[in-house]
Length: 392
Image (tube, rainbow, N blue to C red; front, side, top):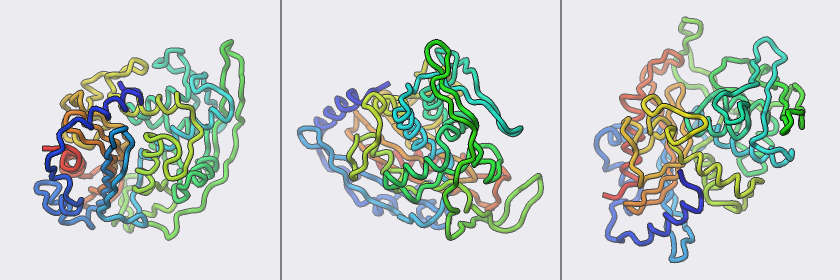
């Protein structure tokens, strides 16, 4: 577990690592085109796999001040990919912002009620020290194991209108977060937000947010349509799947948002409304492995180190070495695999922002659970991380 001050101490140590010739100094495109194995296979057919890669190499001067060198492979912000759980990163951050705006602690008990038959309530949490859910506890679950229910509760707290407005203010106006995850709901249902109550130390209600119907950002235009068919109710529906009412979070924006969190306010003139304690909490939680958490507690065999760390280790369940820390958010759905990470290798001296996405859906049918995650997707991201961030 590392706080931001510990990260900075670690990074000063990186300056002492030898500075001999490094093959990673080659242009990103050259490294990828010359790769063999699964990386070479995917890169040679990059359009088919909808691959995009962004690598930012971070170098520091004698005072530890960073400079950034960013390279792209197939930089196609207009090419839609389903972001899946990667949208949990901005929602976690903006939930902390919203707590500060409302004058409530992220650790305050957060009680979610229901008013519709299809909604569910969340009033207790046995994994929390207090026995109640909270914004902070939901954020822990989001980063430790990518918990979908935790995301949905924060989505209900913020709502799509607030998310769109705040992301636009921060310069991420193309981002759309407009639905809960892992629950099949209509566009209208995703506008209906549960009532929420925050409790004080004596169990009294200190803030009540009533049930409401939120406004929605416009649909994605032009409508992204992908694949050849989709399974619905056990039947194959022929024709491309329409993603116009789905979430959107392009790869460049993902890396920029992560950089904004990691490298403090003022990156690209953007400022988050969070405290330094909030930022330390975010960074620490992003970098933790599931077994390192006490609340919630996760079994290391079931929630292995690389459970939500796809770069470098996604094709293995072995322990991640102590000298490597990955601060990231992954996404995995519909055959799309994405990782957005800040990677620090104390032993090899590397410090990178690395973001990549790949689509592994050979038959181009959605919701049939036939995706090549284990055969191609996870090995690709693991080897890509090794190739682009680890010194030989």
